[in-house]
Amino acid sequence: MTRPNPAAAPEEVPVADIATGALIDHILVCYHEAHRRDLPELILLAEKVARVHAGNPALPQGLAELLRETAGLLEMHMKKEELILFPAMRRAPSALVAQPIRVMREEHDDHGEQIRRLETMTDGFTPPPGACRSWTALYRGLGHFVTELEDHIHLENNVLFPRFETPAHA
Ligand SMILES: [Fe+2]
Ligand SMILES: [Fe+2]
Image (tube, protein in one colour):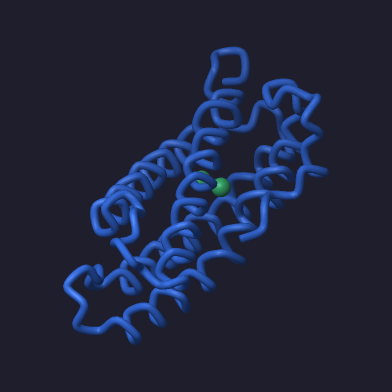
C-alpha cells in the first residue's frame, strides 16, 4: 500500500491551520485517491486467499464480498462529497451546507459499522498461526486501509465540517 502524499499537506502546518481549499485538496489526494487505489488491490487479494484456502476453517467467509460492499458505499459517498459538498465549500466560506454535512456524518457512521464488521471477521486483522504471505499481506493492507479511513473520517468530521457548522459560519 502507498502512503499518502505528504507533499499535499506539509507536516509543519497544523491541520487546523490549513485553508479550507487546501484541506479539501489534501483529503482528495491522501484519502479519496488512496482508497480508490487500495480497495481494488485488497479485493483481489481477498479473492485469492479465499480461492487458495477454501475449506480452511480460519478463512473469513464473505470477506471479499464485504470489501466490495465497502468499496461501493465509499465510492458513492466520495462522489457526493466531490460533486456537491466540496465544490460548495470551495465557492463560499459561509456555504449553507448543514443538510449535506448531516448526511455525510450519517454515512461516516455507516463506514464505522463496515470497519467493525471487517475487524470482527478478521479477529482484528490478526492472521492465523502459519498464515501464508498473501493472507498476512491482506490483513496488513486491511489494517492500513482502516487506519486511513478513520483518519479520513476524523479530518472531515472534526476539522473540515465544523468550519461550516459554527454560528460564525452559519
Ligand atoms: Fe471524504
Ligand atoms: Fe466523507
